[in-house]
Image (cartoon, rainbow, N blue to C red; front, side, top):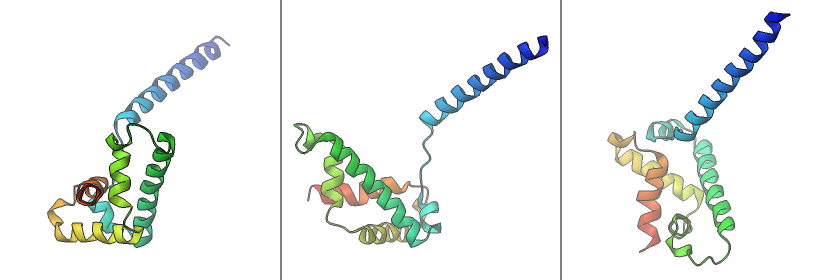
Length: 125
């Protein structure tokens, strides 16, 4: 009986410590898809990745509203201007071409390639 009274609080405390540790770790360690992941993925998986990115951008744009006064000073403005001329297939092909042309850059995150090589270059031409 006394053992049960001690074990339950200790288990709860251990669970709380583990949960806090897991939450704090996940807050700082966001997994990034790199070129290694990209070249090993199917076209369908690449398309799903790009659709997820597009959805995040659309959600953020909706949260900002139709005409926020700061719109031209956000990342979303650059993302939408830079990526809107392309289909998901065209974006996939451009990322494929980047990694094929730069095999030494497979450690580069896909989101960085999408941002630096496509969005930024096309947003303010």
